[in-house]
Amino acid sequence: MVALSKLAIYLNDHHAASVGAVALARRAAESNRGTRYGEVLAELAAEIEEDRQALRLIMQRLGIRVDPAKAAAAWSAEKLGRLKLNGQLTGYSPLSRLEELEILSLGVEGKLGMWQALRHAAGHGIPEAELEPLIKRARSQRRRLERQRLDAAVEALGSGGST
Image (cartoon, rainbow, N blue to C red; front, side, top):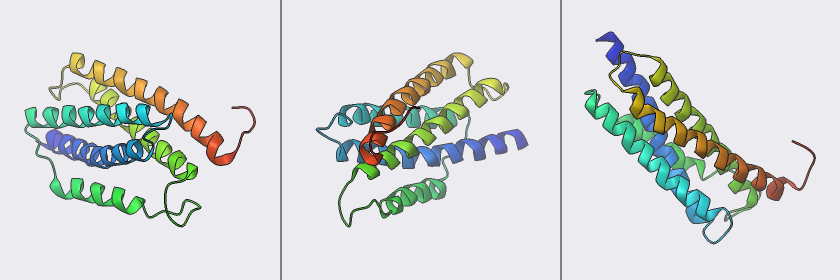
């Protein structure tokens, strides 16, 4: 029971983060509609939502209930994140895009870590065959976000040196 309790906390923490990530990805896709970033962000938003649903199904099969307080806190935090300064009094800026892409990148890295931890920690009842496609998709998301992030950095911060 203790192991399931720890797993419930762990998965609920990741589920809560995914609630905020889905909201951020959708907002970033909408803010970038019609730009070279928009299509990639829309695809990523849909995939992140699919990953959140996959996590919910895993939790459901394991008998783990979603913690609504954690999910609500993550949703609220994403909304508060919109108030950050971006160098403009109102509206969207290249710095906004860069910061959103960086936050999404961190989220995808965390999600990848979760899927890998679940694959590595046997005995929780999640088949490795179910986790492998989720790990592969998270790696793909990470690569696509990194390309977008670096392009956004040039736009927000100016062309620069080597990477």
